[in-house]
Length: 258
Image 1 (tube, helix red, strand yellow):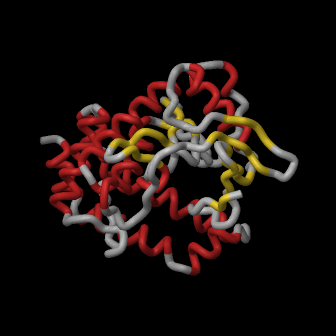
Image 2 (cartoon, helix red, strand yellow):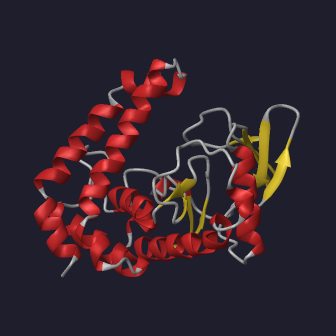
């Protein structure tokens, strides 16, 4: 088997066209979601194959090029950005019939549902969780953090990651002006309405704060991955990004609504 790189180092493997990943209590819900996506014609996601007796879920391998920060090459292009936004919109639309069906009422997700269950959000729609063919974003993977929530909850985090509104030099791309323009391109391609654009920065801030709270909560439960994240200061980087968004909220919002 081939070990795949990513957030779960040494735990994700590929064998031909199958990917083996650790199963969580949320995996049954995710597999129902993935099956629904394919049934309604959305093929830009893994197909759920099942589970083995070693504690793994099995999904189909998503073909394409994968990237991570820093954003260089095809992943940094406007085409990758806008096609990612279009793909996210198509994904959200494909979940509407799923979230409105009776089968979703008792499903367990990794993250708690938000107050308004408008769509199923991916939860981590970042450049490291998509596949590209040349400059076109064609597929999404790693649905562990999928959960019911408003569209803007997912869009806000996606724009934070794709603009990206990050202060760490390793993760940053351009300056606040170019980042805001990238955010607008994402909004335009997604067709986000003006009311959501006006509150987008505040939703980004809330989304990042929720992430930090979750990291700290899991670390207190001795979740090894999050203990390491806290020890490495990942939460401090997120808090710095929140201040960056607060300082530039007026400028970003003006560009988004122009």
